Amino acid sequence: MEAQRSHRGYLRKSVEPDPQELLQASKEWANVPEIMTLSLKAFFESMKMQSRTIRELEESLNGKVGRTELSIGLAQKASIADVSKTMEEAAENIQSRALAEDVHILMQEKVSRSEFQYAIKEKVGVGQMHLAMERKVEADAFTEEIKNLTQKIENLNKLLDYQVKNTITANDINELKTELQCKAS
Image (cartoon, rainbow, N blue to C red):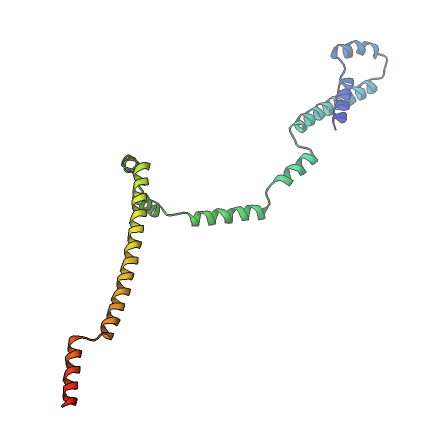
């Protein structure tokens, strides 16, 4: 297409003669019949107008897009399906967003910056945390030891109860004495 434009430019330059040359040429054409000169002038004016029209068309074409550029541009354009899908996603996104009231409630539940800074200043140090963990471990061990001792005491109580039930008491001995005396008499 560029070759056509440069060729048109060449034609335009060769068709438009210098006006000075035309004036000098009019003396040379004095012997030529008037109908011929008028025909040639009309032809020349027609060519001049066509040349202007072609120049204007070329200038307007410079701002226009070619077919290949147009097809590439149209290929990059979003289709109706893409736009519909994007609109549906946007609608879902809008519906899933929290309402202003919900956000306000959540903001009230959150800790403010000053409260957070105060809490950081009052936080427990690493040493204090280590000591507390050691105490907890000691307390857990102590609790476990108490459970073991309690179990041993319960076992001893059961053993004592069994032995007490199976041992002879003073009352049992007195009863036996009375029974023996009764049988002996």
